[in-house]
Image 1 (cartoon, rainbow, N blue to C red):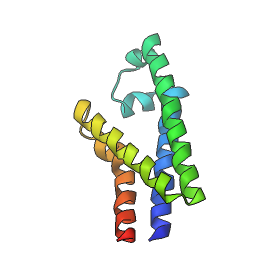
Image 2: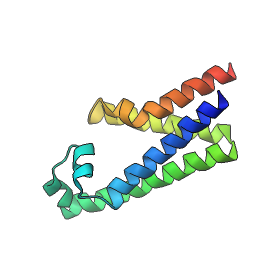
Image 3: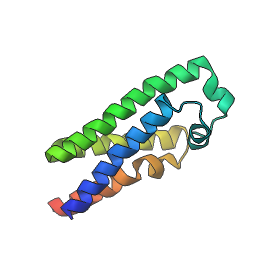
Length: 120
């Protein structure tokens, strides 16, 4: 079970690194347009582009922190960061699109469930 928790946590971190890639490097790509359900024209607006790049840095650092906590075996930080992911996904689901909860938070939710089962 610990291996599965590790895999899910690493995948969560990688997912956030991918989001960073979309927001900072491929900001105006077709993939970014599809993933965020925004037109390429909207993504090309300077204000949106700058905001995406800024948000991308947050997502990338979050991904790196999750991966680092997982590799170091620091369960407290791992749980804290995974809970943060779920809370952010829940907020996004409430304010933007309900699909975000599972798209962005699904792996973290599964990892947290397994951690809870493993601790009990």
